[in-house]
Amino acid sequence: MFTVFGVIHRAAAPGFAGIAIGLVVFAAIIPVAPATGASINPARTLGPMFVQQLWGGDVEWGQPPVYLAAEICAGIVAALIYVAMTRTPQVPATVPAAAAPSPSEAVR
Image (cartoon, rainbow, N blue to C red; front, side, top):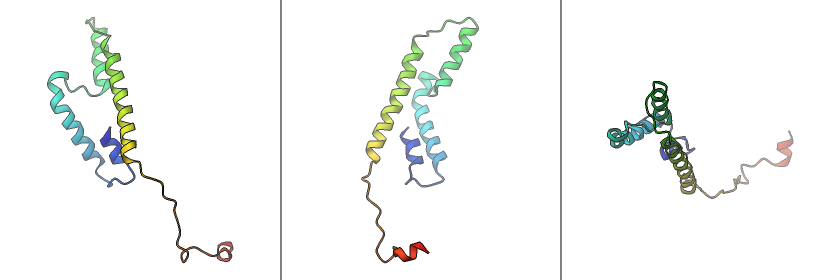
């Protein structure tokens, strides 16, 4: 989530979003693939469970709520931390007196 927030931030360099997100997804998949089949997407987790259930397989339906709750909580925590890290004080915009039009010029 930090990467997605970072590449859409107003101060982010344009044109690198795909590369940054792709590298982070790759880095997340490498360590978890042997244990989870690289299931970092809820659809990738729930889809095979539904198919297995439809074809008469035994599915442990007590696990998906934990997985989904963890995904949602992690996203919320990441968003809150990112907002706290990138918060900058609002500075009122000021226009130098020489650049500001006089009231008579603004009416024209």
